[in-house]
Image (cartoon, one colour):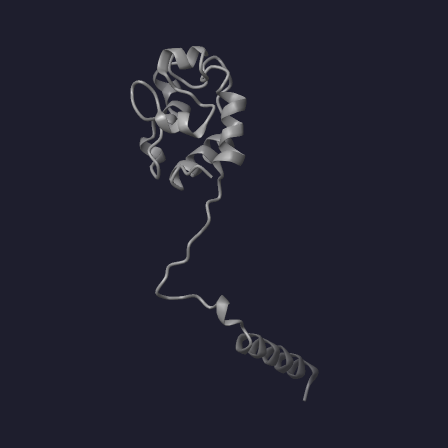
Length: 140
């Protein structure tokens, strides 16, 4: 037997043994679709971003809060929205007003672009918020 054949047979035997001894808890249940845990946490990813970039205006007593009623210092405030309506539609970032203001409002009017008179949020920051909304805008 050549050395190549010996190596191939050894690898084949090792792979077969691994498949045979695969723990049953690793086998996929075809009746239950796999669930994926959220990739973005409100407490760890979104709230610090909002506190850093938005809450200087959108907190009780701030200019943005006084004009719109939007409080971005807590989950309850974000989900309450403004006196004009909700800012977040869980599961749907495309119709969430928060994303419209962060992504597109500057193209319509610099007066409604968020954040006002500051650098636009980075693509990464906006994508994190978008992902959080897509994942259900959970208080996690």
